[in-house]
Amino acid sequence: MSLLASVDSGYVENVEQRLEEVVAIGGGLVSDAGAQTLRAGGKRLRPLLVHLCAPIPGRTREELVSAGCAVELVHMASLVHDDQVDAAPLRRGQPTVWRTHGTTAATATGDYLFARAFAELVTTGDVGAVTLLASACLDLARGEMLQREQAGDPSITPEQYLERCRLKTGRLFAGAAMLGGRLGGLDSESVEVLGAFGEALGLAFQVADDILDCDGNPDTTGKPLGTDLLDGTVTLPLLLAAGRAPAVAAVIRRGARPEDVLPTLAVVSRSGAVTDARAEADLQGRRALELLGLLPPTLDTSALRAIVHAAVDRRS
Image (cartoon, rainbow, N blue to C red; front, side, top):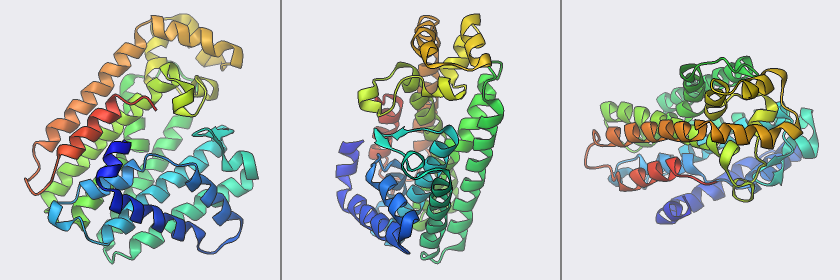
């Protein structure tokens, strides 16, 4: 991802600067906590999608910086709220807002970042763009509630899991891609194709992320193995393993304890669930690549293809 960011370093730097300015507006604890979240870093993949999904002639438009800033603020807000709900002490190896400032401050900080996102996108003067991002945020909230409903239930199906991922992750990826196309001057049909591309990319990214929680390196992911298992989030490798190993299903159903993590993940690995989950990430990645073939030549899809491959093969 860092190589891709360097290709468009001017845009990325502009988004980063704008994020710092926007988060600082108003001052006080919510601004300080928002800045803490911003300093924790991130791949800035969603803003990069905004830029790369604009046709080449439209990539210099200032509206793309505002849109990139807005989608990253939404993402940041969702992470602050997720960490609060999950009582997560670390995010990317750094203390979370919840851990540092407590529940009330985490709630307020997430709300603040959501509000700043829409205040920033309004500056584009494109009401349709605001509606597009609002729709993605509504789906994000629905996906979060679905994740809570599915928590601790090893009997959910892969289809139910993918629907949750589509709502919670895929729709914001789709929104970022569509904002780039729309604000960059692409025709409406191509913008819809970009939405489908973004959704498939988001699904590939989320499945790969869930695999890392079972089979990743904490030194590169920034969080310990088994975080999903401990908080009851049933991911694809966990639910596939639960269908093959009653012991995994039993741990999920009663709620995992810290001493359960490594033995359970060892069973998950031996069951072949990690390998099969990777196959699903590959499938979604191939779908995303196929959709890129439907886009007009004014769009440089080479970097987008590289993002797909990096999302599927990610190690952090």
